[in-house]
Figure 1 (spheres, rainbow, N blue to C red):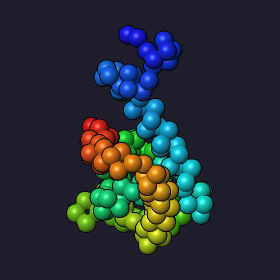
Figure 2: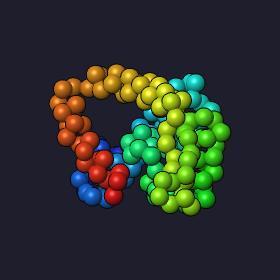
Figure 3: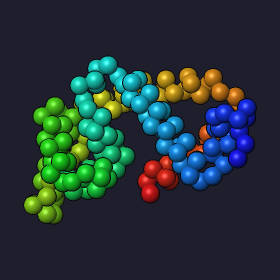
Length: 156
């Protein structure tokens, strides 16, 4: 393959193969993720990203058992139990016995958890919205079309 000026390949050239596209997406998504993490609400800096992710899962799914949370977050149940304990101690979630299976515990967002998550999302959404406004209308159209596909990849 011949590259522009026989030097480093362009993004378009790399993305022509599935392997090249995979590499490009992996790097780009990781960089965007790091950049969005750097835009976290300063008041939430003490809340680790994993705990914030659990708050997001509870927001999207409603109350869940520790086992369900572990499955969604792709961690082992003992790890999720530790995370939930920290979130309960901080007042971000509430824990109570399952209605029909008293051996299980159900976890739900507290008011503090909802407020924390909302503030964090608002700040990061504002940063990303500003960056999107810097793109051309065609670039935004392409991202709108790609977003559901990226979401599907993230959940596969």
